[in-house]
Amino acid sequence: MLKIAWSPTYNHPVPHGHRFPMLKYELIPEALLWKGIISPENLFEPDVAKKEDILLTHDAGYFDHLVNLNLDAKHIRRIGFGLDEKLIERELRIVQGSIDCALSALKYGVALNVAGGTHHAFTDKGEGFCLLNDFAVAAHYLRHYKLASRILIIDLDVHQGNGTAQIFKNEPGVFTFSMHAKNNFPFIKETSDCDVELADGTGGQEYFTLLKHHLPELLSAVKPDFVFYLSGVDVLETDKLGKLKLTINDCKQRDEFVFGQCHAAGLPVAVAMGGGYSPEISDIVEAHCNTFMAASEIFFR
Image 1 (cartoon, rainbow, N blue to C red):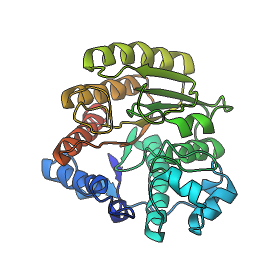
Image 2: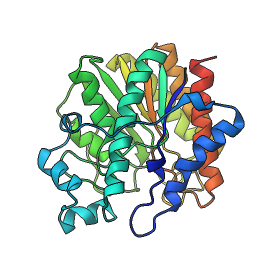
Image 3: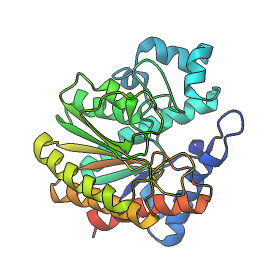
Image 4: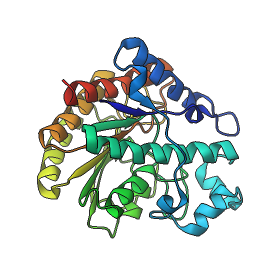
């Protein structure tokens, strides 16, 4: 069964009125239900993540300051918006959603978090609208409880997963692969195990040439037993924060290729949606829904 993490708290608008990016979390499950891609039984609401699981990844001092809403002004500026209790709850549910998706993927082959992909969060600080790194926490969870031993994180968001790279820079059991726009945020990059930097204006043909070269090689060389996939749709040519030129169909083919490679290798995959900032919310929702459709068709056909 296709399992999808979603919570009403995902829709909580961040302080200072950043409502638009949150709207997609409400519209994606509605569109999936309307299209008949899923039924209500496919959806589950995650609880808040436990502190002990968070501390497998994050610094205790940072986490305590975060949940007690007393981060200093410098930290808050790095994150990009102010904090409140509902926002912290939202972040904790997103993290638990990715843990739960990882557990569901072990059982069913694939599971998707409607939110997640908070890859700019470091061990001891947040950045770029990311407070806690959901994939890092979930990867550490799997390894800590000996549910996976060698993990590959595939990050195809338009932005480099700098926080993820920092967290796992000295952990050979987790391999980080980030394929991103070279001149996009973050402007000071970390070093992933494999970084593929793309020039401004890179379109679908060149993008696929690189992805089809690197991903099969990585699967062969790394030999993971679990995959996390960040399927950001800010690679779209319509995205106001991205600098690539993929079409919605290109984005769909990207997801189909990633899922096809993982399924053929017998690898369970946990997915987070990542970024998407096109002016038309319908473009964002369609591109994200295509990810769910591709997962369903490839793993449950």
